[in-house]
Image 1 (cartoon, rainbow, N blue to C red):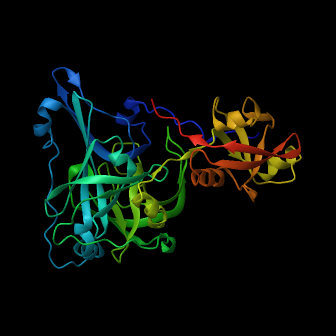
Image 2 (cartoon, rainbow, N blue to C red):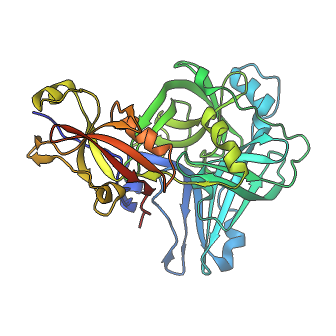
Image 3 (cartoon, one colour):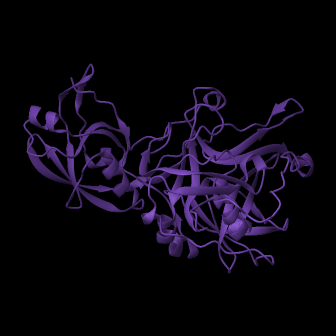
Length: 399
């Protein structure tokens, strides 16, 4: 029997706040969330699973609430005997804490993550979810100095944002962007950031996997990630993952965990992805992930033989989201009976003339486009190949 379990390209589902707090939660964005109960009003925000730290307070007491997260002091800068110590001494001061504030008139919501200085012009890379919705963004340097930062550009598809400050304080180095294509499983990596608001925290691990795909609950399929067991926690989001030479090879984006903390499965956006989108972000680009609006399964040889197909690679369309770009283009889902495919609808075998290997391949290539782009899908429908033109849309907003 064929198991039509779905890989989601389509709907972004609403996150349940109770799942965020409970043992059943399976992934976390790297934000630290701190809730306050003031005058009978609960100000906690619990939903993101990317790793940023948040504080929600009434505007009237916002100034006192900023001290809620106790800041630890980095270790003394003595002669480094370890790889992590050597990297910290070389580029540790290039890592910053990013403080984002959003105000709706009554509540101030403050979140913090991490970032890294990549250019003498005051350019800082962080995670997009760290600054999402922020009305003001500040950066605190290793010297203790805090400056207001401008958000130059955002790449939601890769969870990246580019900030700029007017000047770098004296003694702040620039961290070089390394070549993430050379990263291998087993390589030593060092994460530096502000987990739970503890700035300058250094942890070490290895690269557990490269080119990892991950479909966090309630979100879209992410591809091409670096997986690491270096401990990263809420507040590490946007912080750098360094190699042993002190080069940035990734930007921390999320962790997978049954608890609200690290269990040794973290993910980073490769540095080469940062390099690829950096020119656009410097020009103010607001890049969004494109949306097709289907869920599907990889086509395999057994299914291809069963239905008499002449290919054994592609995507079986299992569901088409109503009102989505796929629905408007007329894509057809398979008919499911119980746990089996009773009859095929469309099987996507090529995108813009290039063969599609499976759902991860399709998601990655759709994700490389922008909303409004038109793509050509080659599908097998009723035993015949047809070309379907689809104008991609924007991902639905979480409610």
